[in-house]
Image (cartoon, rainbow, N blue to C red; front, side):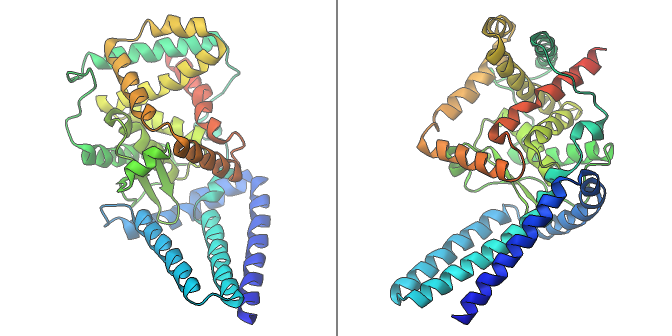
Length: 360
C-alpha cells in the first residue's frame, strides 16, 4: 500500500507542477516562440521523428495497440485475483502513466499552442471581414481552380488524377513542405519522417478524423481512406503540426500556403479546393443567396469533387462520428484552442488576407 501512496503522490505533484508551467506558458508567448518553438522543440521532434522514420507505418498505432493489450492484461490479472489492494495498485500504475504522458505531451509538442500568432510570423495584417471580402476571395479561388483544371487530367467521374500512388503523394508532401519551410524560419525543418499511412484508416473515418499528429512519436499520421484528392492538403496540415504549428486554424493556412506554392498542380488543386470549402461555408452562414450565386460558378469537375467528399463522409455519419467530434472538441479546448473544432474554419481570415495581397 505504501508503493501505491507513493505513486499517487508522485503523480499529483507532477500534474500540479506541469499545470502551473502550462499556465505560465500561456502568458509568455515570446519566450515560448524564441526558446521552445524555435530551439527546444525542433531538437526534440527531430530526434524522435528520426528514431521512428524507418517504420513504413505509424509507430503511434503500434504503441496504441500495445497500450490496449496492456490494459486488457491488467484487467484479466485483476479478475484472476480480485482484491481491493490489487485494484488500487492497478489504479496507481494507470495514474502514473497518465502523469508521465501529460508531462510528455506538453514538453514534446503542446507548448507550441502558446507561441506567437501565425500572422505575426508571416507579417500578415488580418482585418475584420465583410461578406464582400469573402465573395471576392471565393471568386479568386474559383478562378485559380479553373486555371488548374485546364492543365490537369480528370477521370470518368470528373475527379483529378495524380501521376503517382498514395505513397508518392505522402512522400511528395514532405518534399514540398521541406522546401516551403526553408523560406519560413519559424517552421521546424530537418530529419523528419514523411507522413505515415494509418492501418486503422477505416476506424479514423468512423471517428470523423482525416489525420492526427502524434507528439509522442513525432509522426504525421494520415487516414488514407479519404477521397484521394484531399490527401495532399490533409498531409500538409498534419506536417504543419509536426513542424511546430499547433493551432488548427494556423495548420490549415500553412497547409494551404505549402500546397499552392508547391508547383504541383494536384497539390495546388487540393489546397485551393480545401480553402474554397472553408470560404464558401463561411458565406453560407452569412448570406445564403450569395452562396448559391457563387455555386453557379463551380465547374463540373469542382462539383464532382465536392460531391465525392460529401458522399464519402455521409457514409460515416453515425453516433461514433459524433463521439469522435466531441472528443476532438474537448481535446482542442483543453490545449488552449477555445473554439474547439470550430477553429478549423477560422482560417478564412488568413485566406482572405492572402488573396487580398495577391490581388493588390
